[in-house]
Amino acid sequence: MSVVRDKAEPLAIVFEDDGLVPNNILPFLVYQGVVKLDPRRPEETIENLFEANDWGGTWRNGIYDYLHYHATVHEVLGVARGSARVRFCESAEDDSASGAAAG
Image 1: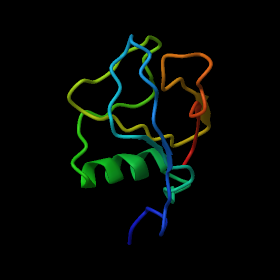
Image 2: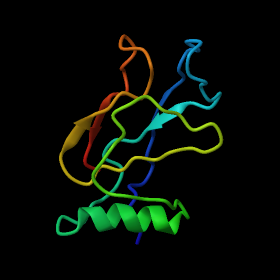
Image 3: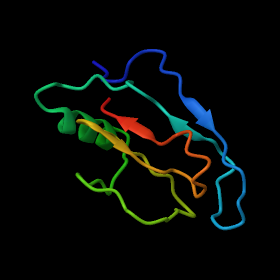
């Protein structure tokens, strides 16, 4: 049984080039509430999903508090409990994808 809800549609955002941080030509994808979390073990639900897709290098409880980017890989963020405010772009004016909540 899949933990991903059927017919999940992402919010797709393309960031403009600000001249400071290289942006990918592919859109930034936000899936909200797409993972059916086990209420007793939500962290394991997400970790197992990432592992099933061969998304390695995982960790829990922490997001860099400084600007960084990945030139050769993509990154995925899963929120198992609560919520966070995260900037996914350089510009403070363009924070349209800054909310992250469980699921």
